[in-house]
Image (cartoon, rainbow, N blue to C red; front, side, top):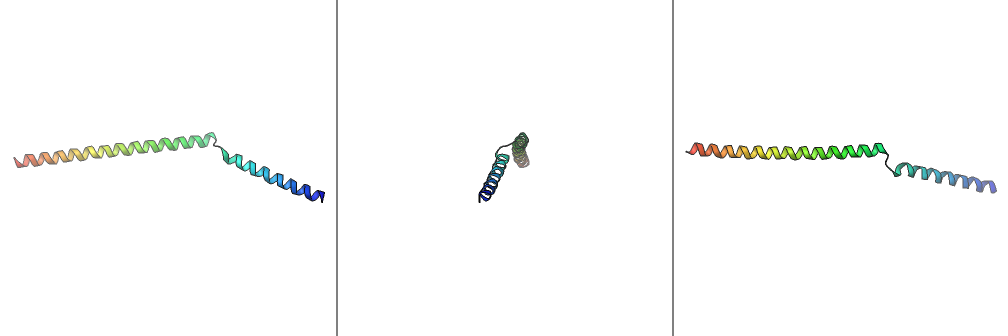
Length: 78
């Protein structure tokens, strides 16, 4: 009975140790993960800036086309 108790205790301690080992492995970020996250955030920011610049350029082009169209109507009417 004493050996059975020791075996159960040993198995319990082993399982608890494995559980703590698993938690510590997933608990924190290492430098590689942090670097990848920073790069991803930087790429997302660059993508947003590029999209904003593209939309701004499209708005300017649309405004220029509108002015040219209005200028053409004025010139054609005179």
